[in-house]
Length: 265
Image 1 (cartoon, one colour):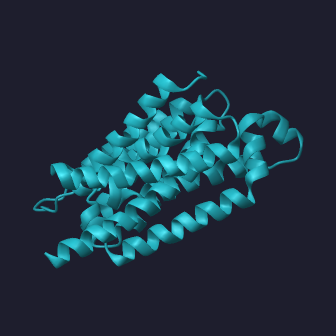
Image 2 (cartoon, rainbow, N blue to C red; image 1 turned 90 degrees about the vertical axis):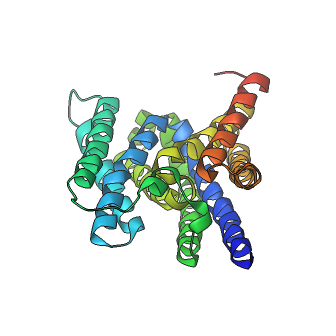
C-alpha cells in the first residue's frame, strides 16, 4: 500500500536522525559515566507523557518538561553535602515513574494506550516528529562542537576544570538537560524505556575501539544510525516491534565489540 511506503520512509528518516542525536550525545554519557542517569531520564519522562496525553497537549513538551524537572532535582540533591549523586538519581527515577503510574491509574475512564510511548512506534511518526528530531540533532551537534574543549576537560578532570575557571556546575547541568531533550525526542522511535540502549550501547562500543574523542564520536554515530536503520529493517522483515529490534541491534553491536576489541576497561 502507498501509505505504508510513506510511513516506512518517514520511519527511516526518523531512525537516522534519532540515531545521530543518540550517538553524538552518547559519547558524553559514556565518558561521564552517566548511563544510570540516562536510564533515570527514560523513566522520568513518563509522568510528563502521561500528563500530556491526559490533557491533550504535545507529548514532546510533556516528556521534555518532566525530564528537565528531574534533571534539576538530581543536580540540586547531588550538590547537597553528604548526598551521593547515584542515590539522588535512583530516588528521582523511582519517584518519577511511580508518579506516572499513579497519575495514569487515577484517570477514571482514560483508555489511551501509552505502550507506544514506552517502547516506541516509529512507523507512526509524523512530519512534525521529523522536524523536531532534525532540529534537536542539529542543536546537539552545534552545542557539542561549540563546547568541545570544556566538555572534554570536565569529563576527564572535573576538579582541574573547576580550578582552571570553567563553570563546571553549568556544564554538568547543560549535559543533563541535553540528555533529557534527546530522550524526549527519541520517544516516537524507541520509546522512553528503550532509549538507553541507543544512547549508551553505540558510544560504549566505540569507546572499546578508540581513545580519540573525534574518532569515538564518528564511530558512535555510525553505530547508532546503523543500529536504528538495521533494527527497523529487521522489524519489517520479521514483523516484530521496531523499538525492541533497534535496541537489540545496538546491544548486539556492543556485545560483539566486547568480544573482539583489543582493549578492555
